[in-house]
Length: 146
Image (cartoon, rainbow, N blue to C red):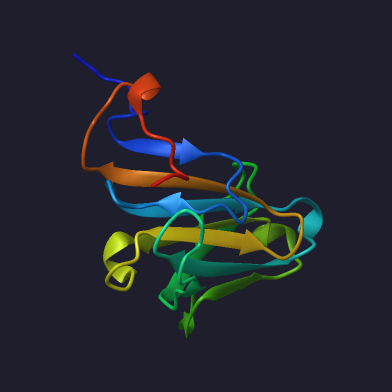
């Protein structure tokens, strides 16, 4: 019998721009970002020990990410960069959508929260995956709490 994915495979915070996301019960998080109009944006990744941002510091682990127009008309394009805690999406329609994946093992010891902040008006959706505990959607914990 098929099961729905929310709570089994992933959890999501659709309005996650600059919001701390708890990775304690997940293998990682995919940040899906979107900015209309080919305006370009910079996304910055930070880690912290708790939901209030204790010990916040850059999480320098991004070497690749993916972009496309975001409207389903094209496939993802892999982009690579020197390891950094930022991604700069060019002012081009082909980079309106950005996908950045962060594995929980990338965080420093004692850190379990991450956030991705847009410097522009880009929307950021955080999707945690590889959930350690599978639950019905209504029993999933809030992602931005300890």
